[in-house]
Length: 395
Ligand code: MG
Image (cartoon, rainbow, N blue to C red):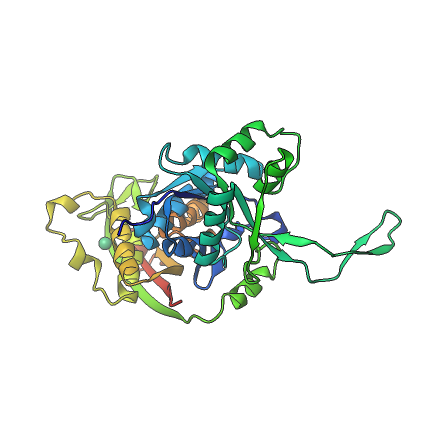
């Protein structure tokens, strides 16, 4: 039997500023059942049939983190997934997503908000099938809450909810029609979803049954509700500890956490001597009982000479990912007399967070001196301790 064509492209819109969530972290990176919210949608897409291409539309500053998330957890999707950079408005992001789809082979496009983590594979399939047949399809649910609106005088007025429906995503469209709708839409018309563009052009949009659990994470508190609606699924966590020390010698710069620190000392090592990344790598290996960095990367191997330690870290993450584990948080203590880390601490946190596919709010780097005592205090060594928590969700 011939397999079904992979003619569906999915544009995952994840470039919003999340202002209504009230935090600094974009909501698609908030932890949801032990992984970033965005990972939940990717896990769903992994279980969908017919999907030939995925475009993740993110903010420029999330590009590296998104790449890391894909590489660590969704290697089965990497070959058919690309990253596009979103614009100021939702429609700009969808346009960027459309432009990034493969030129041929994708006939149906689903546009999905990454902030709806609970849309099921069945819903994706239902929307795709209807859009393919009719041209456009959206999932809706009848509004059951009583609705009230304040009139201009401040008086509360009950709204007749007869016929009212709440609209969800994924929304599905034949590709040619969606491209046409975006090309023809006036920028002056405010739109909050793609079906509105179709309706503005007089094109039919079919309704399919939405899902009660398919809520949109918008306000503080929504995340917990969405997690509860996601149902059972035990989270397994592991803790790993890592330590490393490198000798310091004259001649800068000092490589630490993937960043070159300006100064008169550098770390001596077979690789680039990055004690921070070595400690974090060991912590990740430790959490999964996979030995230590020396077992995976020999100090005698010529290919490891001067090697960028970020590659060791990525390898450890890949090994952990094969076992279903990805980092949830990390805490690092750097023991170094000089240079002072305070001026570069935020940059170190950002870099490490990017490498781990995490946000800065779950990545901690602390600096200690040794008060002039011992080898560290005398400026002859740098040492790092790292503790990492890894998580695996069994759905
Ligand atoms: Mg080392």
